[in-house]
Length: 479
Image (cartoon, rainbow, N blue to C red; front, side, top):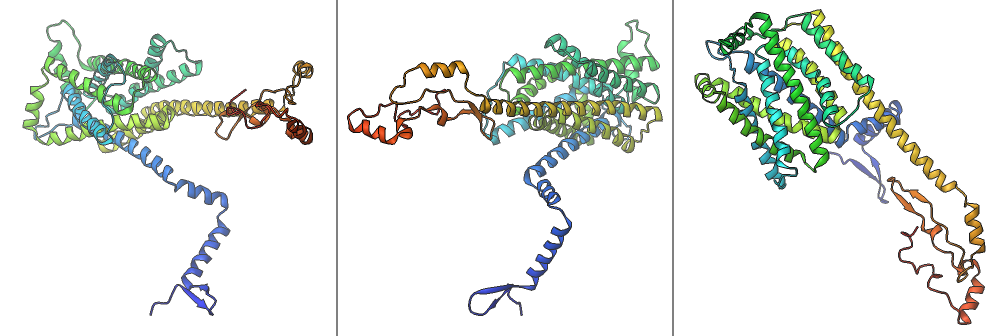
């Protein structure tokens, strides 16, 4: 027989807790005695809905970037079919990625019922799209000559070209510490390249294709020299073009009310058109289709890469909008480091001790810069809050100036009122400035000498409209 949870005592309606309730209360009292209120608040905070969303968002961003890197290396560096045929059509991959991204952006706009009208001039989207297509194609093509680790570290070294383009295009100035940070990253990349294996596993095939391309031009490039020239040149071009892309995106976001979906849709649409033109111009439209016909298993990999690329573009824009550039840079750095680890484990490409030292130097410099930016931002916020509190205190404690007081003494009192003092500016709990109406309105005679005021009213003088405490409807707005 199931017992009730609470047992009645007498007829007065008083109840005693059941055994289950007493055990629960005992456990709660034990936890309250062991865990301090501060830690209980922390636990409740980290289990709140917003924190759960933040953690889930960061995990999704990092996971999407890691999967995107692995799929990219799988398609470009590992062959398909019995003959291990390598997919070498980089611009076609860009075209597939942009097709899926446009479809997902349109689906998002339709579901959210957001307008599809462009918020910026079309030439702004086209400029960003052109540099983005070139950067992505160089990124894919470079994997055929250099290893994934070299490509990943080279992405971290784009601080110098970004600083250069920002100085030339946006007239920005940088501190000595920022140049030192960029130098440390470049030094780490150099150490990585000079102390270990940097060739791609399909470098020989790529060099053979490159030799066919340059045949008859008089260029005697072969072996490691060709590897350094072509692979390094592609990564240098990627760095400068990608830095220009970021600069133009920053300029567009600052100059126009562009949303995330709007930017992704129109930039990707232009990228899709440019990729198609590039495929036709370089004869990379029919050969990839023939490759997919010979190796149908590659279709699933390319589709997965395209979906991952679309998700990466969306989550990157969402991350920057929600958390800011500093948090996004930290996430990207963490992703790049773990991408190198996953690549070494999954694709069996071990690193030397010198390469690990170069890797740690690169990511150490990046994390140091992120910590410096976070510290500067926190100090700026604290200084701003302190200045606001100091201004509020000065406004409250500042006495009336003697000249103003003397002028008020010599001025005639109209309708039995004291002179008007300008109200100090105060801040509410949200930091907004407002005036104190109690110091702003003239003090009526009724509040100072009630009997005298009533006598005047009885004799016919009455109180003027200005003397009435509620006659000014805009009293709280006057200064």
